[in-house]
Length: 334
Image 1 (cartoon, rainbow, N blue to C red):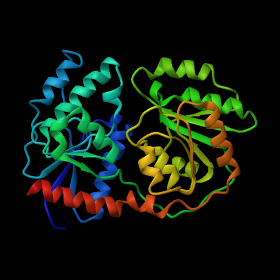
Image 2 (spheres, rainbow, N blue to C red):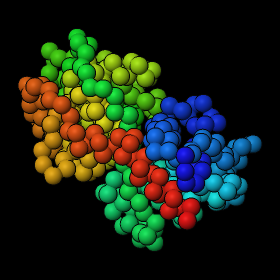
Image 3 (spheres, rainbow, N blue to C red):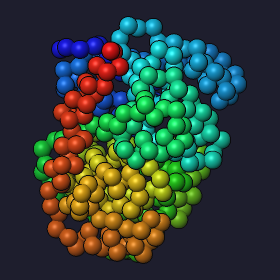
């Protein structure tokens, strides 16, 4: 190995319940991609707010200013909560800059503070970088775009398919699972699966969602990696209904395993899946429009599955992203 030692920091390394959160899954992928490029990278538990929970959301935010990392190595805070001593922070999502929920407003403050503290700010799409420049022009020179890394396992499909369509996301209003339920109601003879993970306030939201689901919808629990892989390789179509996104990793997880993806025509999906022209296994619909979604789903159902775009898969592979990370770490260490 050559180059600087790199600490990949995340709260998921020291708090087990965070290991199922999307940002920590990303953290593990970053560690693997960096190591694939020969970077001497290691997990670093995030400096966290401990003790009595005084101040509600304010206490942990204040603690962010004083919880310094003391290491000579390059520190990549792979979750968007940087403290002093962080060289690189990843900002994953547009949610804190769009949502008006109180918790997301504090998330916005944390994200902005993180971008100010870090030497470099990493985002996963050009579009996300452009949005951040509008919000915080002062970080323009810090921004670097490096895609979310994914393992690219051998491509093989499995049969039989337990469902005709799959939806995987957080159970949050902006993900719009209701639109997926309306799609299922329009195709009563087909089987739809929905796997939602927890988000703040998700219990009451989920109960209301279950109450209005049509009978052809199956709600799946959180699944181990092997079971997720089996679903992606057997279910033919994965559907996204989000109103705004940062990346939406489950869609790419399905795409690289040969699923057809049905997407709203919004960013960052356009950047990730359009490229310079039509991509195999990608079907578009007008956002928040169930009739357009139904047409796209019908088209996907009637279209033969093809191999995914080699360019898209290569762009997010550990090998490609690892090389980009290594260059960024060397830049941060200079």
